[in-house]
Length: 224
Image (cartoon, rainbow, N blue to C red; front, side):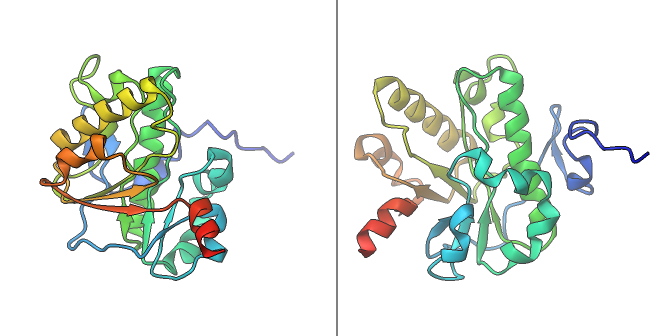
């Protein structure tokens, strides 16, 4: 009788981070800062990659997690596919504010682990930064701001803004997390997938280069 391997019996595929360095004490794998900053010509969602306008694009994951579930389960299947493109943004695993903190931490781990895996296979990886509730971007329960673990300072990062300005509460949490990110990571370059509200971003322009990209739907509409 053939035994079926359970999806969760191996601790989130520890082989993905073999040889990696880790942010301790929580053990979040570190996506290393690249030797040079490369600005992709655009960011194409994973599910649309075969329609990417150029191979100078980065492949991103600013879409429903179900759309890139296969990448999380079988990342080895996409090494050659992703290798065609100039860059890869690490998976934007959801960090819902009302999710248990353990779930949010797990998805931060998944983001970094997959990023490290592809980086070790020669891909230019840009860390996607995502925060959830205040416990992820403030050092309240943990000794560190967990949303920013596994990312080196003074380099390039990516963020997504879709839905983040819908209502006062969403805008508050986004602005608070962005402030914490800028203070913690002090990035040189921030890639922004989606809109950029001046009253949220403008005060950071003197500290970093911000490069904004239209979301996929907006890009396709503008082409028409």
